[in-house]
Image 1 (spheres, rainbow, N blue to C red):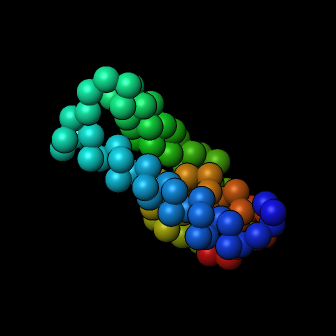
Image 2 (spheres, rainbow, N blue to C red):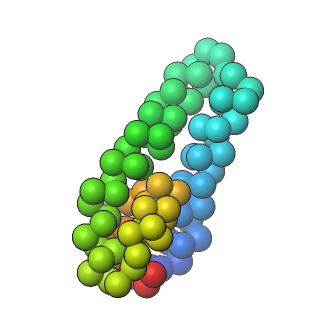
Length: 93
């Protein structure tokens, strides 16, 4: 199942974009209660962890002849749901 390009491209990567939408919507329309706690966790993961993943994805992108800019942008948008299947050879660029 992890070797399925469809899982990564049509489920997990869009899930990352939904996470960004949720994180950004909480900035515009502040949440309250339990949703605010969930929002803070998602915001922390997306805004801090995704950029830090560039240190991992850089070498993977370089080994696949992908520019640093493209690697950085895709890592910030999709996180491990982009670079891990790329590394595993499940998806291409």
